[in-house]
Length: 432
Image (cartoon, rainbow, N blue to C red; front, side, top):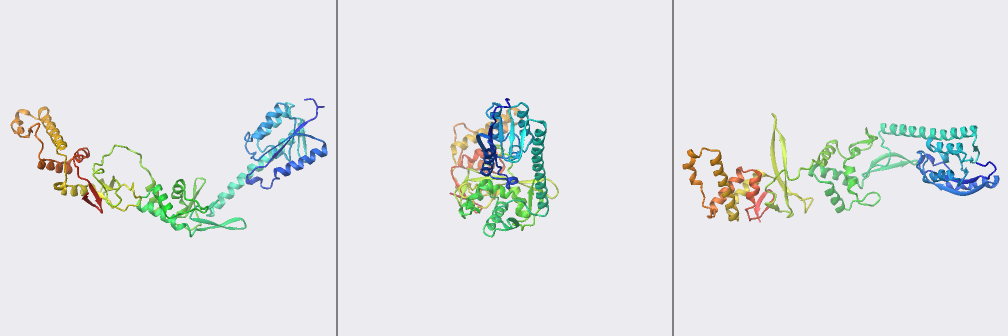
C-alpha cells in the first residue's frame, strides 16, 4: 500500500439489541461523534455503514462481512468506529482485521480515543482490547447462568409466568407469581377434562373457543400452546429449566396425580391400522348425537397374575366431541343383538351363500382329514341342495351361532347380511 495515498475511511457503527449492550451508545450517537472526529482531523469518510447485530459470533454480521470484502478489493483502506468492541467481540472477526493489516490492505483503524496502525505494538493493543471485550462477554454469560440457577434453586422460574398465572412486578423486576383469577379456573378445568374424560387437544380447543377463552393478549389459545400447557409441570408446583426440575414457590393449580393422568392420556400408542377388527362398529350409530360408533380394548391385571381383556364400544365423538353416551361391553352388545334376532331383516341370499360355504369347508375337512369310509354314512345328512335357499329359521340359528362363538372375521362377514340398523342409547341396543 502506498503510504502517501490518502486513507479512504468507512465509518462503521453497530448497536446490538441484546441485553448486554443496553448501555452502549446508539448508532446515531456513534455516527455523530465520529463525524466530529473526522472533521476535526480532516479524515475522508467515503461511506457510512451501520447495522444492529451482535458481535459475539464470527461471520454473522452481513454489513461487517461486506466491509471486509470491500477492504480486500481496495474499496476502503481505513475504518472509523466508536470503539474496538464495535468491530469485534470474537476471535474470528478480530483475526480477519489483523490479517488485512498484515496484508497491507487495512492501513488504519481509528476510534474515538485511539488509533491502530499496521505496526506490532498497535496491532497487539487492538487484539488485547477486542479480547477483553470477548472476556467480558464470556464472563457475563457465566454470571447470568449462575444467577438464573440460583433463582431456580430459590423456587422462582425465570421469565414470564405461563397462562393461568401472572407476574407481580416490583422495581421493574418480577417479585412473585400469583394465580390469574380470570383464567386459572378454565386452565384447571382443561386438565380435569383430559384426565377424567380423555379429551384430546382438539376437543379442548373447541371447548375453549365455545366459552370464548382468551389469553392476556386477547387471542384464542392455539393448539400447540394447549399441548405445551398440558405438558408443563408448573401447574402442579414444579418447573423445568435447562433440563432440570425445580420445586417452585408458586401455588399449584392441580395435583401431581391429575398431571400424571393427563400425561397418560396424551401418550399416543403406535398406529396399527387394519390389524384389529371390531365387527360391531358399523352395526349401529350413537343414539344421542347420531355419530358413528368405535371400539377399543382394555386389559385388566389380575390379582394372582395374568390379564383379562374386554372390548368396549362407544360413541366416536365425531359429531359431538362432548357426547356422554356410556360405554358398552362387546358381550352385552352381542347379548342384546341376539335378543333382537327375531325382529331383524336378513339378506337370505347372502346368508345362504355363507352357509353353503361352511358346508363345503366341512366336506373338505371330511375328505382330506377325517376317515371318509367310517363317517360317510353319517355325514350325507349335511349335504344341502345347491339351488335351494336357506330357510329363515336356519339362517337365524346360524347367525346366533356365529355371534356366540365366531371369530371377529366371521362375525364381520355375517353382520353384513343384516339389513336392520340399530342405535346405541344409554347402553341399550335399539332397532332404528
